[in-house]
Length: 212
Image (cartoon, rainbow, N blue to C red; front, side):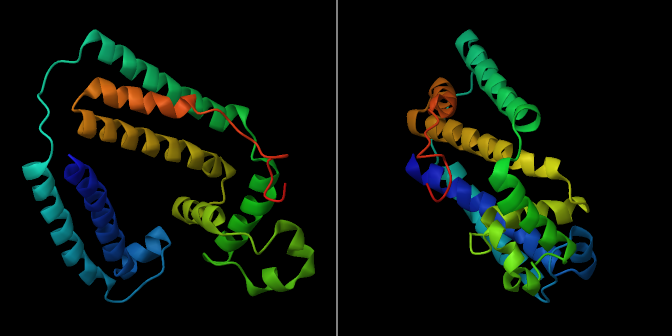
């Protein structure tokens, strides 16, 4: 039921945190991956592994039991629809959509500056009035993610920025599918829930900018 649905994100987050904590606490791995070195952070791996293991045990012991069966023709068709939707989203992201004003000015410039400055924006960026056009006070969540991708790839490649919405789409589809299976006990319901993501209409307020 809900206990099994709630424990799985905890297991995944704890496992990911443990991997990154270990990498950050190792000089060689942190330098190769381009993440800050934090001495002693590798000890968090023990706690994260214990949390992930306990969560996996609880989820398997008390989670909703789903009978294993061969997929029906309807389920196969639903899988094909979901995969086709994700393929269409990938095509839109890489071949039919540009980065736009926000992507080029508010994200790309900030991500590029932080990338060439070893992961953090230079102080001169906030002090120089010429950069006010890029809105230095805007949240740095997307530019920070873009910077991390650049540092991970060891190059400032704008194609990686286009992959961010696709990765979010894949993650949301997975969560909708898992939630539908857990709550309804049916794979078909999970697939129908995953397909609903692409049925959400696009809504713009004003011209779609943060100030409109």
